[in-house]
Image 1 (tube, rainbow, N blue to C red):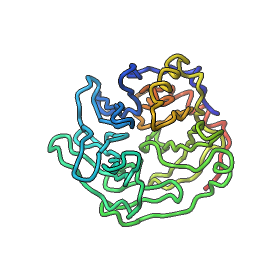
Image 2 (cartoon, rainbow, N blue to C red):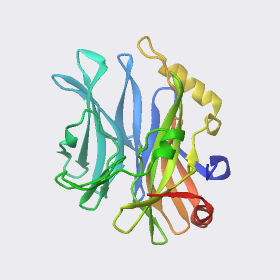
Image 3 (tube, helix red, strand yellow):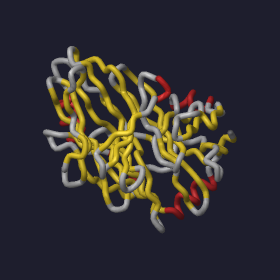
Amino acid sequence: MIFDLKDLEVDILKKFDGECNYFNPSHYNGKTIFRKQYKHNQIFVCDIVDEDDNIILKNHYTDEFLISYEDARFINKNEISVCVVKFKKEDLLQIHTVEFKTYNLKTNRFTNFKTQNAHFEKHWQFLNDRILYHVDPYTILDKDENIVFKRTLNLKRWKELYGQPCLSTNVFKVNGKNYLLFHSYIWFSRLNYKYFIGLLQLDKNYIPTCYNINPIFEANREYTDCQLLNDLWSWRATELLEPVKYEVIFPMNIVVDKEIINVYSGLNDCSAVNIKVPINEFEQKIKDEPVILL
């Protein structure tokens, strides 16, 4: 891996407190939002909350479903994107769909998408009037969800070593160059898997040019206090569910300051963190890292 979190400054913004679990944050213009998870009838549901724990989107029942909200990201000061999970009301262990929507923080209204008529949608990124829909194949949509660019990338080596690439962060710019982070994971056993984070380099039109052979981050349980992890796994063990012992770094969004790349991330599924990468160190390491051309 390119960066070991032990060598970086990592600010813990919120974490599992014994009653509720906080992770997968997003930040924009001084404001941070979080995914807040808690138990409900032997399953786990989520709200979206701000830094003061004020509820932005609250899970609720409809006639047919239990609606839960996950992994909200700021698009701009007025809008967030969010994954909307619909559990079947008659069997809460069954997920009906995961839909993607945007939510206007001023009007309190959702914008619905066709979501390409798929069963499971997550982690879209918005590029002005375009939507970055997938990494593999790399797909850009217009605002009406028409495909404007689609290409199968040379990701064979990454997939063989680290699993299927999926989107994670917004496109971010460092000294005129465009990047984004993607994630993947591999299973070690039925209830244990590890995440890997890749770095994709893009041209000025957001078309990929290459990716770094080595992960920029690799998840590790040692990044989290072992007592916190054990408490989380005990809390997640219910009569209906066994706890999956994730090793996770999940970047949600990136904010670049003058000297620091702020990587707002979920860490080991039990804390919301800001991983701070100095720009000069990032550029130096990326310059010396091997890449695969796309």
